[in-house]
Length: 218
Image (cartoon, rainbow, N blue to C red):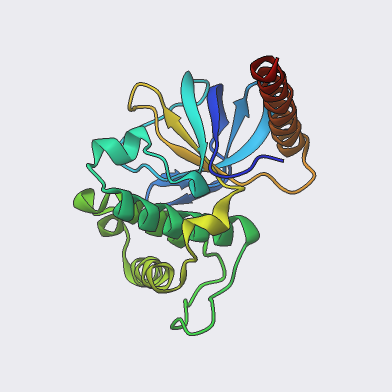
């Protein structure tokens, strides 16, 4: 089990599919990527200003949202630690709603739609790229829905400590390509691989620390 805060280090990523959802003339999540050899990993893009292409490969820093560590995107935007924590908690909350196929949450005005994935995706993009105003690419109910999702996330998203299982894949070169979030399902091979790697790392650390203590005592 990987204990937050932690850093998963660098991974190799390839964007393999843009999925089947589109809104406002662009594809919206989930997309699919190969991450360190694990195929068909669902990922959510949180970066509207940059671009990624199918088949493109790059190296990314993999961190957990709960670790509250700087990413290249947050550094580029000049986010303070507090602003970064708030933004990633909102993005994680919305990404979970997108992945779960959520309907309108309680207390939010009627969405007026049966498919919210595109609206939620634009709300996520607005969090980090508000200066580019992604919502301006929408019209009618979708624009209203996306704004409502964003407002709801701003008011109701838990703190980053609730997102130990949400991984941020941030390009090591600062982007492009884009930054992505991943929420592997419990029990998936990719998540088990991460968990086992964490256990192995903790076991290795504990053994080396024990040896070091013994050496000092000797």
